[in-house]
Image (cartoon, rainbow, N blue to C red; front, side, top):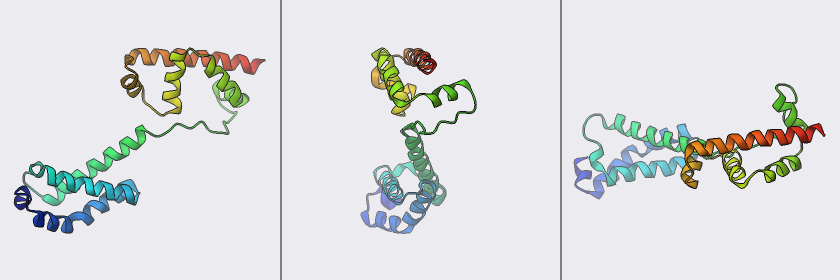
Length: 170
C-alpha cells in the first residue's frame, strides 16, 4: 500500500492481480450478477487508487472484504429502492374487503378513478405506487414537504378507494 500511496502503477497492478478474485467473488456471491459484480470490482479498485489513505493499517484482506461487502450492500439497497411496484393480474378474492373490491374491478375503472383525482394527488400516487419511489424521494424530487406528500397520498387513496367501491356497487 505504501507504493500505491506513492502512485506506483506497477504496485497497483500487482495488488489488483493479487486481490481482484477476492473482490469479484464477494460481489458475485452477494449480487448474483456477473456484470454488476465486475462493475463493483472496478469501483472498489478505483476507490483504492483514488483514496489510498482510506486503508490505514491492519489486515488488508479483511479491510478489502469489508469495503467490497459495503459497496455490494449499497448496490442491493439501491436496487430495492428503485424496484417498480407491480399490481398482480390475479388478485385473490379471499381475505379482507380491499381484496374483494379490487378483484371485482377492472383496469378501466382504476384508470378512470385515478384520472378523477386532483392532479397533486394523482401524480404522487403514480410516483409512489407505479414508479416505486419512496415518500422521501417524492418529497425531494417534487420539492413538496414530506408531511404534505404523505397527506396527499393518503387523501388520494381514500378517495380512490371510495370511488372504486362505488363503481363495484353499481
